[in-house]
Length: 274
Image (cartoon, rainbow, N blue to C red; front, side, top):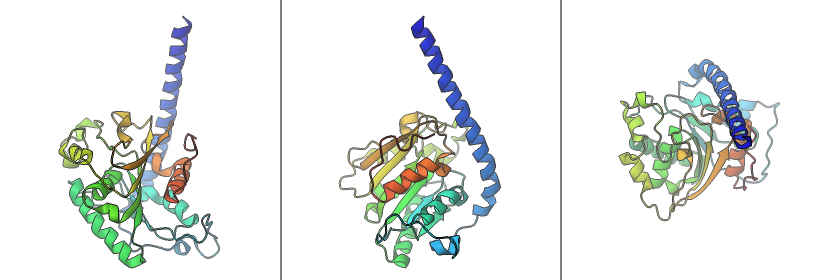
């Protein structure tokens, strides 16, 4: 009887966590719908921190004397760069002078083609900034595009760190009604593209940090957002109680991204603040 009661209590707690996460997801989706039009057009240039914050808002540089590589932010499926408004501002206030949120075409139908376009853009960024490498933060599909570039198109020469947020590294079965879309089919488990990413990748130099949540409704199975590949330098960060849409705007995840980009080790449980 006690065991049954304990099991019922655990299920109630789990159900309450799902309800809380769902409520937050709805609130974030509502806010994002208002912001979405502001991110339809591509950014013209990489902006400096002073241009966004203004002369009267001092920046907080925790790593004085260290020149951070440019950071590129990659949004998810049918989204745009507006999803990164808070994260971009957070990074600029913490010492990153080159941060750009990219848009890829909503008509994109092939992850490989999007990865090749990303590679050309990264070469342009390196040429403009004088850096030889960039860091990337990718949400959902954006992380998968960046990973394909790094792992299959030689992008490890130009990407120092790739941080993924709720990216289906081994494929997801969520949203079956979207199967007619070619890029959704590429994100399914056992697709040709997923088989490519499972192939050996000896000598890959990019460091990976994969944030995954136990309440990510777009990951099925839930562990698909983990990156477990024998040839990749990867660290998985478990996030408790956070939904898919919440990841790019959550303060604890932003702090974890900052630590990952400066090469610090994440404190145990640092991102479990949901």
